[in-house]
Amino acid sequence: MASLKEKIGYALGDAASGGITWKIMSIAFPFYFTNVFGLSLADAAVLMLVARMFDVVTDPLMGSLADRTQSRWGTYRPWMIIGAIPFGLIFALLLYTPDFGDTGKRIYAYVLYLSMMAMYTAVNVPYGSLLGVMTDDDNEKNQFSSFRMVGAYAMGFITLLSFPYIQKFIGGTDQHQYAVIGVVFGIIAAVMTLACGLMTKERLKPKRAEKFSFKQFADLFKNKPWIYLTSIGLCTNFFNGFRYAVAGYMFTYCLDGDVTLGSFIVNYTVFMAFGEVVCMIFGGVSPAFTKKIGSKRMAFTYSSIMCLICSVLFFFIPMEKDYMWLMITVVVLTSIGVGLYSPLLWSMYADVADYATETYGTSSTGLIFSSGTMAQKLGGAVSGSLIAALLGLAGATMITDEMGNSSIDPNSVTDSVKTMIWSLFSLFPAVIAAIMGFLAYKFPLKK
Image (cartoon, rainbow, N blue to C red):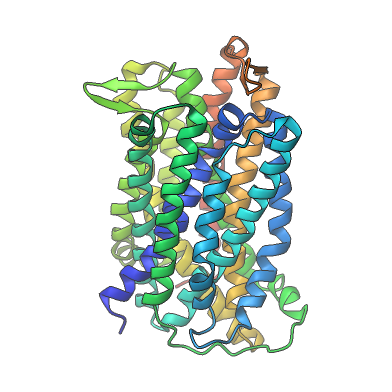
């Protein structure tokens, strides 16, 4: 039986990667790269697509490598312990804007973004895989997964809620603010990742395939539950990716900036923070909800339907600040569904890993969990890239100020551009939620 201390330690891992680094990369980076760092919409779109092609190779290789690791700390924990400091350092450097000129900044962005993706893979694939060797009890797996999601969403809430206030406290230019934020959150992420590696235990010994073989990769495509779950994972990350990546544009161009409700500042990070705290609460409720429904796949299906309905409703809210509380209410309702299904995804990956071991004879836990990390990064970056491309198609253009920094020309933000932004937050995710719910309903494992 795992202790409460260990479950909290496991939660710290996703508090660092999901609640800090990935949350900032998902919600701030599309806006940051175009309006702060100074990349064009086309450069930002290409950067994120290139990074995803990079991840298609590195994520499964990392999973296979992690499966074969042997050390005094175990199989998966050493990657978090050793990788914690580089993880935080590269994140901090990524939020720094150098004075290198257009070409130099473009090269810097590519090198640092690809390095961050590689480091995220080196830490997060083993972290996800750790769930498969901490316990063989299915209920305890659900509890660990629930703690993981509560940690990620609790830290995500703190990160997003504090973002505008930290910016205001730091002062100076946007570039200076983001650089300082990178250092602060980079340190916190490194400490949490290290604590996770030291506070958890690996109780189960994976049945290793000591020699590298492409057979493990081939077996994945024979594994029907893995195919379904990878598709579901892509959908969950496209769903969140569109919403988080477009929020900055929505506040800037559809709502004309931050909204003040009394003395309370609501910008795009605070707006999404309401959803984070709801996800945290319902991530904790998820195991009881699943037990009540009777199976993970049906609990996932019902949660997806809730996300579908709420996403469609959001589209019909007028683009006016007076409706801010209604917008927040719909985001909260959407986040109930997200909070309920999020822990289920990682628990289902553990089930797929168990199925693969039983079916093919050797453990491929790291390889299977790597597909979850790849889906996370693919969904976040492709959605960000598509947003940049679709805004361009809708008519948005770039301008350059006297300092050489590029941003979207406010004069190019027509009604069609605003409608595209609003749809990217609502109708696009609604379609994805429908696909996600159907795939969850058809998922072959009936646990």
